[in-house]
Length: 237
Image (tube, rainbow, N blue to C red; front, side, top):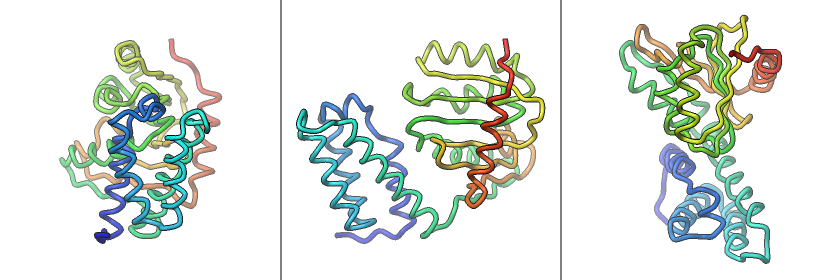
């Protein structure tokens, strides 16, 4: 079996997560899904032999049709993929932490896009300067199955029309709330991982150098803080 170093393996697994077929395609095990499942299984075996055996079992259950609940098998498949991703990121290459030079706007966007592409259920953005430019740059490619929550403070009059049009066009669920106490910028993915951005998401490294860093030890309290702000936030009209 060809060797992949941890960085290569992490990149491959993140790409598998980004390119996952829809659940309806996986449910019916259509041809598109077979190649994807084969690639995913191969990567999981390279990451962890024992997990690879369990992953193969989930795939067989998915192929078994009515003998098993396909939703349970799909949940197991994606849980294992995310477990591999987080294990490799933390133990092999460490938490994601990038420094982006002044003017390297695409580099910043590309890193954030990769994180957005890993979502399976929800994206929760926190940024006082969310606006229409942010919506078109980051949300246009999000799959309809992903719930999006946006917690902002300023420029909501620019954000709301863009969100409404995008939501109708792409059939995605986007909720917007405001909080007068926001200062920092965060992105939370599926309630499992979180990232801090040194600059507003809409600007990236446009006006100054910035950073994009995964939150590790303080993830749970940081998420809890912004979930509370979301719960108490106002709904713009």
